[in-house]
Image (cartoon, rainbow, N blue to C red):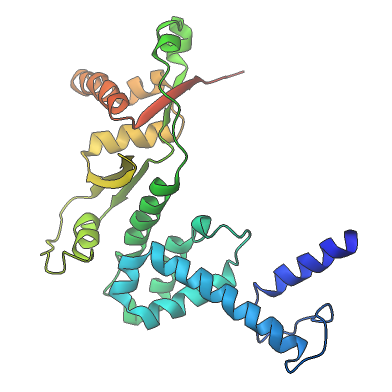
Length: 265
């Protein structure tokens, strides 16, 4: 069994590296018209193509803007730098936006597309919202039974399907314009950062532009800030009142789906 596990590891590793690298194919049976190396190359190309196609499916707007050929070149470089660590293609490409940002910085021909990495983050958030596990119902009974100290140390939980994004570019309009039926959408330059929330409604991902205060409170919840810390952040009387109305609204939207008590010990 140990020998079989070792062979499986060797084979899996061989599928995730460039064909130009020297490979140890001694564990592949000989015979037939193809050499062991050529047979291994078939698996390599098939695996690489599957992962590039997964990236193209997730980042379809980026692919449309860059063109299929150029996008595939970038996707192939990403595949070799960040080879798959498991066989679930739905989880592949989490670092693609950061990789794309570095790639843009290193290639002058892409200087007209500084927004692409943020667009990629939107598209990944959209895919994650689709595949996210369902949330447990909010436990209002447990919330009502908390002591004052527990309430101060309370941290809200965001929905598993929720993703927030801040961008200096009109990412929503760019994304919307590159959907199949919206080719002629006019895009205007924005003067202030755009704040987006991606979530799931009726089993379908939704992208929504939100106010900066909503983004700010969601961002701080995402960073596990306690209720007392949130109150301190929104400390002015007007903004504190706004927070008191925002939290119930976020719970009603199912963007906040639960809570836990932070342990400071």
